[in-house]
Amino acid sequence: MSPADAAARPVRARLVRFHYGWVIVALTFILILVTAGVRAAPGVLIVPLEDEFHWSRATISFAVSVNLLLYGAVGPFAAAVMDRFGVRLTMALSLIATAAAVALSPLMREAWQLVLLWGVVVGVACGFVGAYLAAFIAARWFHTRRGLVVGVLTAANAAGQLVFLPSMAAIATHAGWRAMSLTLGVVTIGFVPLLVLLMRDRPAAIGLAPYGDPRGPQPIAAPQGNPVAVAFRALADGARSRDFWLIAGGYFVCGASTNGLIGTHLIPACVDHGLTEVVGAGLLAATGVFSFIGGTVSGWLSDRFDNRWMLFWYYGLRGLSLMYLPFAFDMSFYGLSLFMVFYGLDWIAGVPPTVRLLSAVVGSERTGIMVAWITVIHQVGGAGAAYLAGVLRISYGSYLEAFMLSGMLCVLAALMVLFIGVGRRRREPRGAVAPA
Image (cartoon, rainbow, N blue to C red; front, top):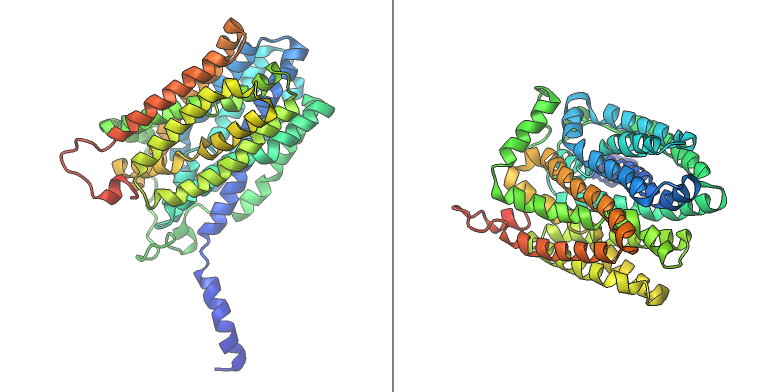
């Protein structure tokens, strides 16, 4: 062997050890980040639309609730469609539809157009790059490190707030909400070529095994059955388990207390207390920074500790922070900053332990589609909270009642998740209920 070959061997070995699954994770992270920015935009739009068109906050909140509901409802069918027609094609079409709806927003003149574009089209299109996708990619491309991958990809939603919210609020303030919508549409469509170039459907398609799988590449089974029937059959099987409903119930409260309430109404609540939209968007973006940290660390922890107790602390502490929020508005900017740090660390931290617990209940093969189903329930909670908070704001003149109600629901969810796995006839090993 020549000296040059001997020197090149370590480099080649490192290249061989690098798994293409990490490229898929990076690409998926970027795409989730972009769609998270799109879904965060209604928080910036509420006040400008209210001022220009004199639509009530309840009407605008209804459009947001439709968005949240459809974003979750399409998930199980999106997972089945991806299995049938491929990840790359499905995600590319969803990005194109999202960009088109956002770019057409400046033409709106009636409230029903807001519901159609931002509620129906953006909700359905973004749902194809929805919350289920983290578990879908982790289960398909990784045999080990799944908790970490789920944590990182879930944190992309928080990163989307961090990257997009301050810039969107600044553009809306200085150039108008129409310029903001056009800019967001151009950015979204710009990532389609990157998706088409780099995305692959599964490891076996490029001769690889999932990361950490010692068995080597496995043959690809041809997808069978109608995607809608496949999705409902998976739900029927999972719904027979009491643990599935305990996990889903906690996720319902999670949706109500995060993107349904804070993600939609924090900026208008800041305006109600004399702060500008830019300040409110900055606070929400700061939450994204700490959500990114909390979600990633939680993914690492979920591989090592009892996931039930992790969820207990996450939901309980979130409930206390929401009960504190109405009083933070009167404690100056620093009171809100404390809430943003504390709440941000908790925002998406519950996703990795939820996915790990669900995987133990339904099995790794169905984890992706069942995460999509509990995401439906998550978004039902979010949609209900988004609309109800707007109604309570009109009825009582403040968001106090909405924040307190959401906090109490979180405390209830914290107690509920402790019953997951309790009373089974045959107890799983500790790894199945806790770190998988």
